[in-house]
Amino acid sequence: IWLQRARQADTTSARDFALRSAEYESDFTLVRISPGSAMHASILVHLGQIRRAAGDADGAIAYFDRAIESRSDFPGGYQGRAMIARDTRNLEEAIKILQRGSEATE
Image: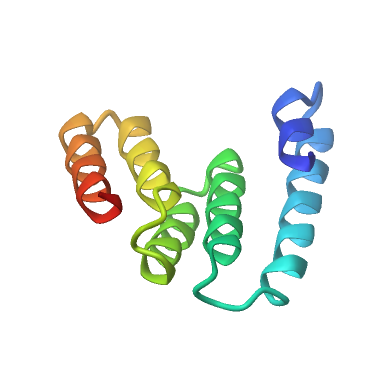
């Protein structure tokens, strides 16, 4: 909900508050979920989306990579990485990432 609020915020301060709240709540949940579970990978992807929304591509990539390492059969990490590549107009890289994800998730 906080990430959605950040995307719809009217002011920079409201957006930043919503992003900080989203990150805080996701971190809170992440440390309480067992690594390797689908929920763990999903939360890592969500944290990557938060970092992407905050304009932190490197931070987002780190979370997406952790999601892929945690559960290579979970598509969210690959999708997030491809979105970062698309953001930088590196469409060939985005395609490669999605193909890798397609193979890993069968």
